[in-house]
Figure 1 (cartoon, rainbow, N blue to C red):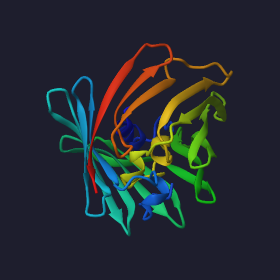
Figure 2: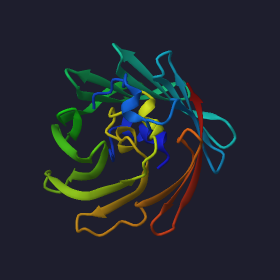
Figure 3: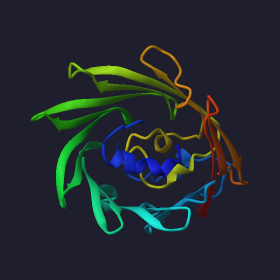
Length: 270
């Protein structure tokens, strides 16, 4: 659940698990009121020494996200383009080859995203997302793909909030009768500290819970359609914090102890 790696999964619009994306002007709404600094994530390092880094523009909005292997080789990178302080396009590359892109459409909020993937050197539209809101909060995302000559809704995510944090996500996927069926329900618990991923400029953009919430997830519980906990997908997270209440390290462990990962975070602070 290394946070920013999920961008590449989401770019393809497949397995969307977790919009308005305009950067918040009032950082006080998303930070601990006793903290004088705003800190921006610039690097995430896993315990296998692979790492990801982020590059920002003058307004502290992410313009590039790069992924490096354990030997320091760049193997994937994403470029983010803005128009009127809104993200207008995200492009994902492997080396110099463009592999996928998303185009963003707005009215009062983010209305829809159009998904393209590389098909024999040609960027081909394969589907789109639509977004609905309850007030200013994202309430659902629907994913549509062109299958069997038809445009079908293949996935829907519904969001419930507790204050400024997402408390529950319900996921539906297309079943054998080409209708949506409940596949999982996820619940979240939080600490009371600053979530630094609210400061990188994408916020509710992708419907990913880690960018949408004020605080940091301490427990993530996923249940299947019968209400049984999926232990190898559910997580406990433990953080270490600096004096500004930003976490500098977290350890995530699956409920069944099948996997543990430690990630360290570097910041630039202002």
